[in-house]
Image (cartoon, rainbow, N blue to C red):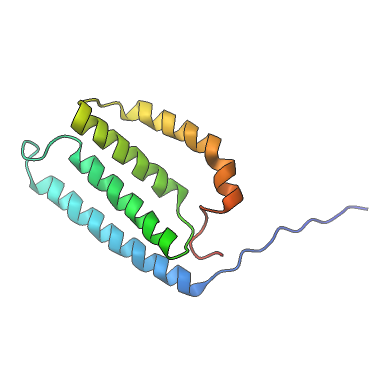
Length: 129
């Protein structure tokens, strides 16, 4: 006799999915405005690292808005936001540019902490409870 194990089926919340879609659209708009500014403003005008910090703040802001509204945060955009923020700060204040090294360090830290995140169900699909 084989024992059947069923995985719990996630419940989709249409209100949370709609709110998440609005948040993503707003933050994409912010990102595109910043990208346009980056293309429009000469590199000599803005210090190195400031654009990366802006991208990091936008991505982490999106996930903070999700968290405040009880929507699962995206591990991917949180990871990218942290990476952009740390890389921008290092480039702006310390004149260090090692994005690849930070990528590996943060990815390793995320993998170590992933069971903790999974246990608390911090990250997941926005439309699921």
